[in-house]
Image 1: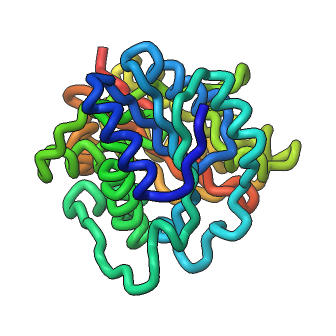
Image 2: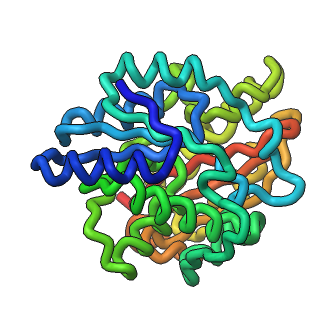
Amino acid sequence: MEVVNTITVMQEKCENLRLSGKRIAFVPTMGFFHEGHLELMRVGREISDIVVVSIFVNPTQFGPHEDFESYPRDMESDLAKAEGRNVDLVFAPSVNEMYPNGYQTKIMVEKVTKHLCGLSRPGHFDGVTTVVAKLFNIAKPHIAIFGEKDHQQLTVIRRMVKDLDMDIRIVGVPTFREPDGLAMSSRNSYLNADERASALSLNKSLDLSEDLCHQGEREVLKIRGAIEAFILRHPHTAVDYITICDPHTLEDLEILKKEALVALAVKVGKTRLIDNRVIKPA
C-alpha cells in the first residue's frame, strides 16, 4: 500500500493506472476508520482492480460551531486498517494542499440540499460537493463508494455526478451497525456509557416507524409524532429533525402511498447522530 500526500503525484499515479487498463474504486473518508469504512473498502476490492482511499477531514463542510478541531483522528491506525483491507493507494493531503492560498471555488447542488441536514447545517453540502468533486478529479475513479447511512449525502453526490456528466458510477453500501443496532459512526466515540445506551433509540425508533407502517398507519404526522415521543423518553436526547420524505427528491410526505425515507438527526449529549431507513406500506 502506498500513501500519497500531494495532488500532482496522486493524479499522475491514478492516470497511469487508468492508462494501463486498471479499474479504480474510490472510497472518500474523513478517517478514524470503523467497520463501516472497512466494508466500503471490501466492496471496492470486489468490484475493481485498484482500491483508492482518501483520508481528509474537510474543514469546509463543518459549521463555525461544529467539531472540526475535535473530530477524531488516528492516521496510524487508519493506515494499518486500510492495509489490512488490501487498499492499494491512500491519499492523505493537508488542508493547505486541498485549499491553497487564494482558493475561491465551490460547487453547489440546489434542491436536494434544502432538506434534512441541509436545513440545520447551512453550507455543509457545498463543502461536501466541492471536496468530493476535487477528490474525483484527483483520484480519477471509475467507481466511487459511499455508505447509505448518510442518505442525503449519497443523493447529493449522485445528483452532482449526473448533472455534471461525471463518468463515475456511484455505489451505495447499506449501513453497517454495531451488534446492538447502533449505526457505526466516528462520532460514536464521543458518547459516554449512558449516552451510548440512549443512542440506541435512533435505530429502535426506525423499527417503530416500520411497525406502524406495516400495521396500516399512513399519516406521516402520526408516525413522526410517535418516533419523536419514543426518542425523547430516553435521557440526553434532543431531536434536530425527524423527516419522512421521498427517498429520491427528499421532499416531505404527508401520506404514505409508496416507499418513504425515514431520516433522523438527534443530539445525544453533545453528539449529533444520524440514521435512516426506507419503509414501504405492506
